[in-house]
Image (cartoon, rainbow, N blue to C red):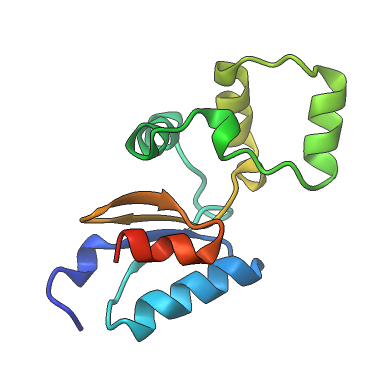
Length: 120
């Protein structure tokens, strides 16, 4: 494994093909990442806010707009604030787009999966 490989973390959803592909690419590059299944170990508000800051994004920048839950929440109140979306993402981590990778070279939402190269 590459030196410092423990400093790569992937916030991973094993049910997502893009997330699985990004994880495989990290491992194929010789790294042994910390894998956080954020559906089983949800983000804290501070953690998610820190990831957003590191990526230079707001909550809506990583908001997963697919699925029934998003549709219900958006329909119920279309003009939610960033803080409200952040709180909802902490309560319902499925609302966070994935995967997010934290590496020594930076933090990136790997959508598309090729964005991983920015931080490897």
